[in-house]
Length: 490
Ligand SMILES: Cc1ncc(COP(=O)(O)O)c(C=O)c1O
Image (cartoon, rainbow, N blue to C red; front, side):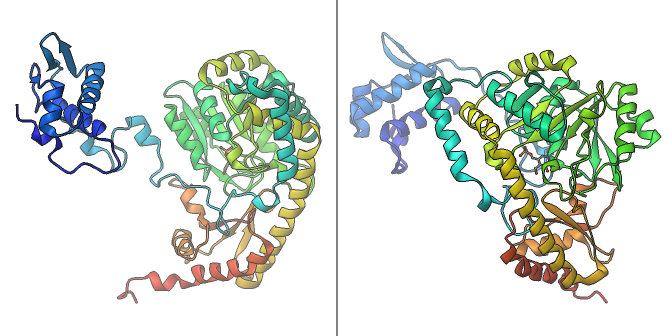
């Protein structure tokens, strides 16, 4: 048999010959070039005719026999009888480019833009001050965790999270956030995204309606859509989520996702009457409220408004928190707090739905909280972020004057700068990106018919020394609007 074609084209330099021979034989078998039943030459003969070592051929043959592509029998080696190759699918043609092969559900749920890295450009929202991370105390906690736990921590972490972390966190949430929870009500997750995914799958059924804030946190919509829920957009106004009677009647929710402490992205704080009204209506319609307590740790003045979770004993609320902003996003640790009544079932379901990891980081974090490092770090960061916000406000006022309205400064790591209608936020954000700024357009978080026009300006990682230069570039991005107009436009 003529098998020169096997090694006809030049061999890739990095790959061993045996792998090349294996791949070429396998491709030939799967494509039908070598038909079922075809006898291959004996290894010695093939090695001689291809001028390669016999072991090279033996390796390729043995691998293909192990995979079921070849059969070794008394007479030698032949091509196995394989099922006919199905005709190439053409159904992918109607799927948007880049999403081939994904389920209809995934295709519908994903955002049009690819996922972003958490870039640390000036004004990138949601990026904490990496320069102020308490490396020494954190490293000491990690070292203690390894020393005390050793190899026992190489397996999966405890279901629902390490008890020591859950205990420490329960104490922290009780004393700092007034939640009065115990460790059994807490499930440790790998951040908010994992928490939302879990809530969607454990509290919602396929096809159920989930309300999302509009404008709102886009990653939450993705988590809900991927879990097979129908996302219904509900507008946000100055007091927070503002559902109409029509929303309650015609789109009754199973889940309602809110960020009441510092709505993302508008930065508004949900009023107390709204909180109470939402709990009442959710209770009547059998809905769960998912309270993402985003940014509550970084209040500028006074304590954070009471969490919905703690407002009423039997409120249908699950509370979600993260260490992504208070420590660092790569830590991938967050938590869900559930009412006592469902705690045991929720923990049991979580144990079956997920595999827990990061046991060492969890132990270190428990230690970090218990020793008071966490509260001290939060206190330091609050002061630091307040100073950054003040510097940014002053620079924006000086650059733009009273023309622009700033809001969202009560908490968190970002401000919203509202723009007059003739300056389009999407265009400004595009120009700002070219100038190396991480500004995001408010409109990019909104869904029709909601329109909003402003810039989300993260300052968490914006050093004071960088403020004036960053604002100078922002002025260029805002003011150079005319340059993008078509040349023949009058
Ligand atoms: C509203 C909101 N919640 C939570 C998070 C944090 O998510 P994770 O814990 O998955 O990092 C973010 C990140 O930017 C956010 O914008």
